[in-house]
Image (tube, rainbow, N blue to C red; front, side, top):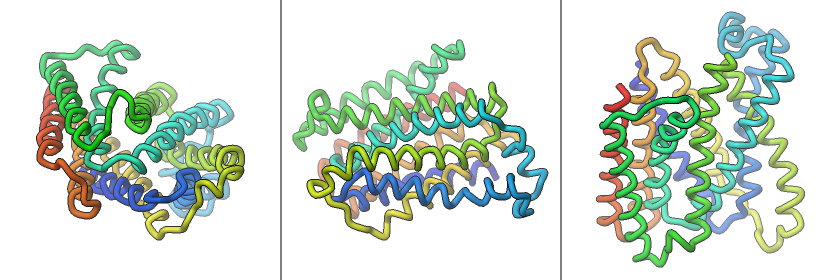
Amino acid sequence: MWVGAAFLSALLLGLYDVAKKRSLAGNAVVPVLLLNTLFSSLLLLPYILDAHLDLGLFGAKFLQEDYGYDNGLREHLLVALKASITLSSWLCGYYAIKHLPLTIVGPVNATRPVVVLLGAILLFGEQLNLWQWGGVLVTIVSLYLLSRAGRKESIDFRRNRYVWALFAAMLLGAVSGLYDKFLVSQCDIGPIFVQSWFGIYQFAMMLVILTVIWLPRRKAEPFSWRWTIPLISLFVTVADFCYYHALDADGSMIAVVSMIRRSSVIVTFLAGALFFGERNLRAKAIDLVLILFGMVLLAVGSL
């Protein structure tokens, strides 16, 4: 069951990237991200209302174990920090996916487990084995080859600011993943509490960003409504729910779940080829296979 949940999460993550690409084409980034945080918050608002108003929607036992009635100011501040990290990653990622091909964005995002592993070494004292080091080295080589493929489309990995934004999004996303581990394992905060409240805090932060950054220059970067915008929130919310469900299942292995989740890059790659007319697919496909092979090595080494 948990393997099926992980694959469903991967599919939805791929569709999430496709919906972002379509929503951001010729569109303002900040309002799209604001609406994403709004819709995501509304999707999870019933958990908050049920926990505090005792509406009986999900059951007291479920909320007590996965949400927690005793979370106070400390827990909310920790989740607010999580929201700021994730929102920073999303801002960078939204600008990157607007201006870069999906066939480059997807493979770079797929390297996130490498950064998570390296972070685990530094923060949690974990040690890499030969399988994992092999996965790291293969991933580094694949990124170098991907940069060469990008140059054929006049995308210089060293000088393109959106490539730097993409890598910043990937790094911040990895930090967010490590912080999730800290919240759930070290702070004993339920994943439903984290998922529901960090959306609320993100929306509040985006209101400030919208007011300060976008509104004064909205004529230079106009916003237009797309029906794919609410799909962004739907796909990422359900994908995260499936992810947490997979991790919570008996016998589940986080290395396998993480590897399966990264297979979402296949969906984005196919969408870039079929729906967005992207080029240099053969070279990028080789790089994609290398990256997925590196992820397999990481998963095998983590079992």
